[in-house]
Structure formats: C-alpha cells, structure tokens
Length: 509
Image 1 (cartoon, rainbow, N blue to C red):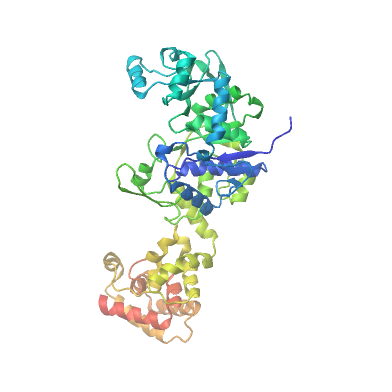
Image 2: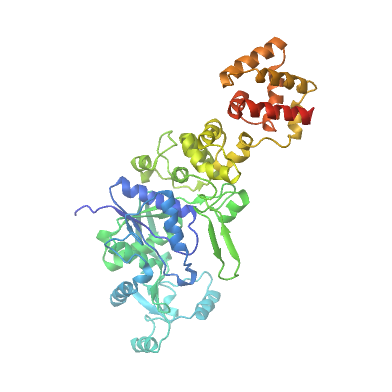
C-alpha cells in the first residue's frame, strides 16, 4: 500500500474561549505534522447548535496567529477538502447516515427524553445497548411501516449505531500502546438527530477525518473512551485501510490537588488558562463574562509555546529552551507521558523571564516605550534602552518595569519609611552634604570616574561604604532598590543627581 502523506487536524468546538489544554493539543498536532513533512488542518466542529458562540471562531484563529502556530488549510485558510465547518456539511453526513442504515449498522430510535428518563429510573446504570434496545421504541422493535409513518408525520428521531456484543475492539494508540475493549460494555451512541438534521460529534468526526484523509488523530485523553466507538464506525463503513492512528494526550492537571485544570484554578491562583482575554455575555444569565489571557497578561507567545510543549512531553535531554523549529526537530510523540501533567504555572513565568533575557534591550524598550510615554516620560528612546539594559534581567514581564524603574525618570516625592528608618543614619545628612561637594567638583561625571573618586573619598574619611551607598540610594531612588549606585547617578547626570541628593538631605535631615 502506498504510504500516505501525513495529515492531522485540530477541530475545536466554537462554544467559548479556547482552553490552554486545547492550545497544547493543537501544538502537538502542529509539531507532529511538521516533523513528518505533513499538513495541519483547521476544522470547526459546530454541530452542537445549543452551545454555539458566534465570537469563538474568530477568537480561536486570532489565538493561533498570536502564538505563531500556522495551519496549512481549513476554515479561513482554504484547501481542497472543504467545507471545513461541520454545519456546512449537512448533506455530506446524510449520505453516510443512509449508508449505515441501509447496511444494518445503525437504526432509527424514537424514544422521547421522558421515556429515556423513565427507563433510567427503572433500570440502574441504564445504557442504550445490545441488551436494552429490544425494550425501546426503535426500528429494530417496530414494523417498518410504522417507522416510515412516524418519519413521514414529522416525528423526531435519532440514528444510533448498532454495536454487536462479543467483539473485541482494538485501539492502537501511539502513546498508550494497544487498548482492548469488549464491545459488550459500549452503548449504541446517537450518530444523528433529525431535530436539527445534524450528526453528533462521533459520526461527523469519522466522516470528516476519512474524507479529509486524516492519517493521525492526536487529541486529549478525555476522548479515549470514544476511541473504540470510532474504530467500530470505521469498520462499519468499510474504511479499515484508511483508519487513522490515534494518540491520546495526558490531561493537564491542577497545579495543586487532584483533577483536571479549570478556569477556577486560574482565578484562585492568579494565572490565565486561556491564550487571549475573552469578553462575552452569558446566554443564560445575561451577565458579562471575562477570562484573562496569556497575551494580555504580558507573556511572549514563544514563551507560552515553549512552556506548553514540555507539559506532557519530554525531549529526553536537559534542554528546556526551544524555538518552534527546534521543537519540530525534537518532537517524538512516543515520548509523551501517559500520566497527567501538573500545570506548574510558575514555570510559565520562568519561561517568560528567560525570553526577556534572550531579547535585546532594544526589543524590550520598544515594548515598554508606550507605557513610559503614558507616564509622561520625554527622554529619548536611547535612554529608555539604557534602563532596559540595566533592569530587564530583574523582571519576568515588561509590565513590571515601570514600578521597578520609574525612579530613572521621576524623582522620588517621598521616601520609604522602613528603608529610611534602617538606612538613614544620624550622620547621613552630613555625609551626603560632603558627597554633593565631591560630585560638584567633577568635570568628568562618567560612571568610572565617579566610582574611583567617591571610593577614594570614602577611604580617606574612613567611612563605611554600605552606610554611604544605602543613604545615597534612598536619596536618589526613594527606597532600597535599583542597580549599582554609579549606574543610577551616571544615568541621571550630575545636575539631577545632586538635586535629588540635596532634596533628601533637606527632607530627611
């Protein structure tokens, strides 16, 4: 048999913002496709009309554009296998529903929700399967004439797959190995609903994967229980030869405690679980809904990608920092974990810090400059770059720079009480007055000349270096933070340094 071109797909449902677990699933699909020289398809699974959210599709596309994860074809990208929205493929699915019915692999059921509820109360752990379907109202228990009459009268119905007992279903999983399931425990899942003339996830998925020539289905562990049914559907259609290989990824787990990661965990611990901010109105309550996103929180997209790639996959080396291209080269789906991955959000912060270190001071300054201007900074871009050179290694996010660095552009208007109590000594005013005289006498105010001159003066006066520098820092900064003192004074310049020092002497005495 000719080896097929690798084709994978990411197929979210547009029911709200894209969870970070979905982003990781898409990333692994992308890495797998690119590693094998294949195609990455974007499909929208919108057959659940009750949960459809109009804004969700655009949100998902924007999220991947920000992350730099590119699709080769699909919704909004074009391609030869469209349409790529399931709601636009109704007629295609009907053809395959008829094929299953005609071959006896599926049947029509007329049971109402009330009848199903009554049966659940009557039979403990009831499921619609090879044992119970004979008790229900369906085309297996009713005369053909009655079935046709009910359909012609507009009676609503569903189509269920007919799963025979006594069969062993083999799922060949690239991460979990062979998974074997007895068909006796499977229920006759609904494949199609006449009410909206749309298939359920199970049928639409299989038909689309087959027609779009998907070779590998890489999805979350939560879909593993559905895999035996999907295998049976491939067999029911006679598509065994083109059945894709499955890989079920480990769940993303809470950072603490047990269970899978949820929005509540992010709200509780203060981290986002969505790629972008999400604003919407809840259909049921009419209340505004807001979810914070990684982009708006100040994360770099490459940091998010790097962080997610290592949640459930291990390259087998000590390397942690990867570009997207390096991830493609290193990715091996067999090295994905079977066990769930704790969502260690602090590691995401660490990655963002590491990417700040990797970026040039000019790159960081371009990102930070708008905030500086909002605060009235009139200094040149070059001076903003100098601050970034001194301080970018101290932050994990660009948004942390202003609270840390504002003193470079704004003189302190007050002095931290705790720092003053600890660092401003009885002789500090006298010492800094003498220091001002030393600084005023300098024609060369370079960092090197300041440092040499001031240190010589401190030694000659037999002063304690720490006492002088701590008091001077308080005078220039307003608290006990910042880089080396001569870095600060050289940046501020002679006039501003002396002015700030004298003001502190006047206020702190």
